[in-house]
Structure formats: structure tokens, C-alpha cells
Image (tube, rainbow, N blue to C red; front, top):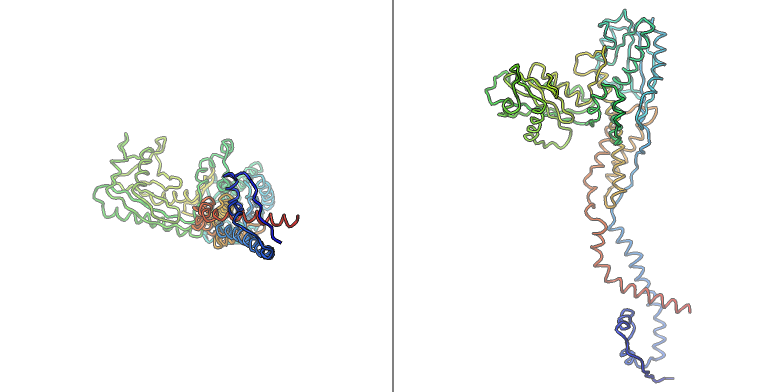
Length: 551
């Protein structure tokens, strides 16, 4: 049965309604008039095709939102390979064993008392967390004073569990040094303490042993400075004032970072005068002395030495002045200008290692260096820069002394303490390895934690599998080495530091740094916006079909 189309008088459609009809795909009045009659077979065909249309529409929506959007997010997001971190509250345990020997049986009872007092006194010393010391003592027995003094071995003996310190108590009658010398540091691993016969003096001698172990052989204040530096902890003025005077003087040196590689540039400043033939051999002697010192510390750090000459520098006319005694002097202010001038002339191109510049004034007449108060000094060591030395018969020894200061090997000794006049002692090598082990452990842990903080704070920093693998190996080494009951292994911790530093400074971290989320969105908006309106219309129509089906 057919029905005629009935025309009704309706008000004209507004512009707003026309736009709305266009967006929703509704037919206009003119289109409705041209529709004509709809047959029953067409209606059945539309109903039969509704399922396929609905399925196709749903498939398109699923393709865009459930597949396309996640794929867009995954292909434009920064790759982050996971890696573990070393906890900040994890302690770095240093197992220390103090080995005691006596030169005669008369001190058998005293040495037991000294050992117990030493263990107690060392536990009361300030130690900055996460550094943790485990102190033990051991009595070796009676040893001959002469045999121990002749032990000049410079070989560092690695132990599995402890960092060993060796002290020998020598009675006053067996003491071969000056009676005013209370502590004699040895060339080898043994150090000697004069043990008094009077009971009232024994307490002072016991306190000297505590000071010897804490401030010289182990140097706990320097290790505390290393930990504070890596943890970015500032010392309050009252903490600095509470330090002994010797520690206050070297605080700036203890706070300087220890390097795994040093490159010493020995810079000789020459006058514009004729140089004698014998004067040309002097720079070679200075470099040879430093290279010999480098061989002795190769178990701790690598030191390379190079020689540079600045001719026509004229130090006498630019920086030196004569005092009332007609001596050529280098004042403190002139030395600052000299350092600036040398830095301007020597532009380093070295990529690795810490560069130290040792400036030697090659003048025809002797030069006297003055400090800030105008007093005569042998030379000047500048923290993390190098040294300024005049040319004289002591230039080589002062250059080695400046290198010891730069590497943190120098120590302020108390009155009555004596160190042999050698470039390096075995116990200093062992102490330097302990410092380097603690420094490497702290630097490795800090580098891995810094990499983890970068990943959390910068959303588009990339961490590939190689970087994460190096960080993981560094943490695994720290977990294996830094634990109670095991000595800090220098080589393993050095490898952990190298791995952590290489991961923290890897150039691949910047691969996506200049392609943040707003730029990714700006690139994809022109592609996504044209399909947003059709998809929204499609979702609306699907919803209406489903809603009418329920009704």
C-alpha cells in the first residue's frame, strides 16, 4: 500500500539549524522533497545492511582509538631501559684492623690495654654517614725494632677482609731516634711509637696512638670531607672551628675531588736572554723527578708529565720586583696575574684527566716567592690548578711536595712526630688507595642516583640498553664490594666509577632532549584534527542506533 506525501507548512530552517544538520548529516528540506517514495524492499535492505554498517563503524573507531592512538604514543615516547640504583642510606663499610707489635716483652700488659682503649676511642670519632668503620685490633707479638725499620717495601698487599695498619711500640731504652721524637713514621708499612716508662706518660702515649690512626694512617677527617662533598653537605662555621688547626689548614685540599688521571704540564718561563747550556738540562731533571714520582703512585692513579716552554715571557719585567734587599721577589698579587697570563697562553686540548700546571720561573738570578703576609716561602700550590716554583736547587723536591698536596697525600704532623725524607711511604700508598676506594664508591653511587633523578625529572631523556647496562653493572659491583665483612676492592670500585660516569655522561641521553611532548603534539595535530569531527559524528550515530535499539 502506498501513501502520498503530505506537504506541511513549516517555518524556514535557521542558519544555526542548517549548520547543525550539516554536521550531523541530516537531510535538508529540499532533499526530503526529492526523496520520493520509499519502497518496502528498500527498507528491508537498509535494515539488513545496518549490522554491517555498524560493524564497519565500530571497526573504524577501534582502529583509530584502540590501535592508532596507543601506537602513536608508543612510537613517539622516549625509550627508558630500566636499571637499579644504589640506595642513599646504604652504608659504605670500611673494615680496619690495627696490628700491634712490641719491641720487648716488658710491654705485653700495656699493649693489651692500649688495644682495648684504641677500639673504644675510635668508635667515638665523628664519621659522616653513609661511611661506617669497623675497628679491630690484633697483637702480632714481639718483633725486632731494627728489622721492622729496614722493611722498606712499597708493595701494596691486598687483603680480603681488612685494611691493615701496623704500629710497633718501642720502649724508651730501645728508642734510637731523638728522645723528643714521640712518633716515627716509617718508610714501609710499620710506624713506631715511643712508649714511656712512667705511668703518667702512658695515657698521653695512648692518645697519640689514637691520633696517629685516626688523623694520619687512616685520615678519617679527609674521608668525611669526601663524603660531604659527594652528598653536597655544607659545613657550618662552628663545625670548621671545632676542627683541629691542622685540619682547618688543609680543609680546602681535602674538599678537592680526587682524579683517576692527572696530567702535569711543567711550564718553564724563560727570559729573553742567552740561556747557558747547563740551564737547558734543568727542565729535564724536573720532569724526570715528577715521572719517577708518577711510577710510585701508579697503583693509585695515573700521572702523565709533559714539558712546555714559553720563550720571551720576561717574568722579571712583568711580574717580579726587587725588594729593599735587592732580591727579585714574586708577590702574592703578581702571582695571581702570572697565573692568569699562563692560562691565557696555555689553552689545553686534553679531553681526559685533571690538568695541573706547574710553572717554573727560569731566571738567571734567584727569585723569592712571598705569601700574602710578605713572608718568604719556597713556592705556592694552587688548589686544582697547580703550582708556581722558582728555579733553585730545591725545585724538584718542591715540585714533588706540590704534587703530594694536590693528590691529598700531605698531612700536618703534630710536634714531636717525624716523617722520613722520602717522596712516598708505603703506608701513604695504602692510605691513598683507601681514600680513592671511598671516593670511587661515593662517586659511582652518586652518578647512578643522578642518572635516576634525571630520568624522573626530564620526561624526554633517553636511556638505551647500553647506558642502563653500564649503570646496572656499576650497581652490581657496589653491591658486591661495599658490604660488611669485606675489604673495599680498589680495582673493582674504580671500574664501578668508570661505568657510572660513562653512563651518566653518555651522549645518547640527549637523543630526544630537543623533541619534547609539545613538539610531538604540534607535529601530529595536522594529521589528527581532520579525522576528529568525522569520528565524533560516527560515535554519535552509533550511540543513537544502539539507544534506539534498546527502546
